[in-house]
Image (cartoon, rainbow, N blue to C red; front, side, top):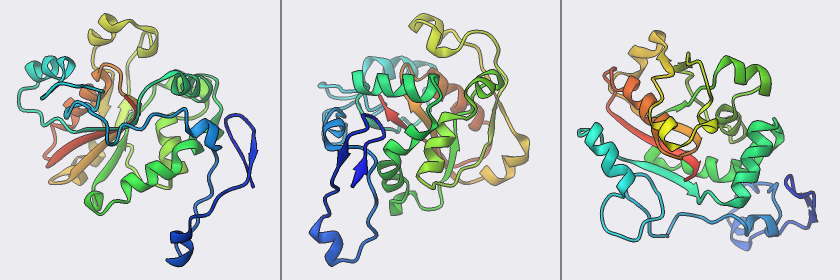
Amino acid sequence: MINCLWCGKKETEKLRLGDLILFKKIESTVCCQECRQKLVKLAGRSVCPGCCREWLEAGLCSDCLRWQADYPDYVFKQIALYQYNAFLKEWIEAFKYKGDHRLAQLFKQEVREYFNQPVHKNKICIPIPISQTSLELRGFNQVEAILQAAEIAYLPVLHHIGTGKKQSSKDRKGRMLSPQPFQLDERYREQLKDRDVILVDDVYTTGRTLFHAAELLRTTELKTIETFTIAR
């Protein structure tokens, strides 16, 4: 029996025969089927190969083409789990802005499955940091909370030093014109040398935040950068 963390509905958990036969560890769910059906998985859908935005045409989307003009030698590799819809907008509001830390658990299974793939073995996971003001108001970094819930190790390589309005309060133009808000912690520079890195954020909107972070990381001698978000 589970209690959905989102709606509070009680539901009997269904076990898969394959998991029982193979003696797999049973991962307890924290979200009922009704709420899960509100999530639109991007895997298997037609998306931009650069940013995972739903995209019916061939090649990079218009957003990625603009970024490509600014970063011509950047290898675009972004993965998002879900489409940013009304359900995820409400989740962000409750989790990120109202500070309901429990909601980090909603995507722990999907996040764990993604990062535990053999292809990601030995890659360094780096969360996007938040400002000191946001940390004091919220009490936690939402990206770190998501990774902690999924039991994914990470390195706090970046620090937020920006001031002024938060990205969420700006329109698209304001986001795009935002100055560099991050600083690289030099203590980790040597650890990044010749390593593959995955930058993690909660939502990919314009890409500005992730490109700011990637810009700093590319000053090190790391091998590759890819990015991961819950939603796009």
